[in-house]
Image (cartoon, rainbow, N blue to C red):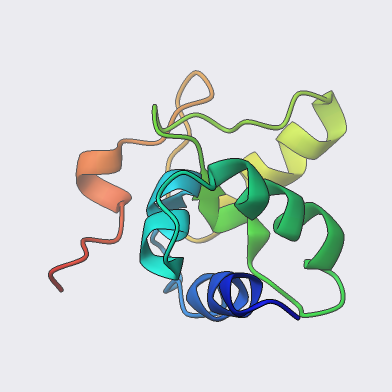
Length: 102
């Protein structure tokens, strides 16, 4: 496994319940700020194997990025079960995004 991928998995595993991170934020913290798409690919291919809280990763606008209805609903319900409201497909990043200085 590449070091970047290993870092991505570790970062995602440590997103606290009730908080979210963006794909770009995870990429930056993992060492490659231009690799948000690789974060998405890692989530897609490794979430089950590594039991990742994939639902806590959203796009930079705070939107649930999953396009198919079933996946969208699963992510929305998972976030809301942790107390994160999803309004019109969006999470308020000011309230729920992990701050890197915490």
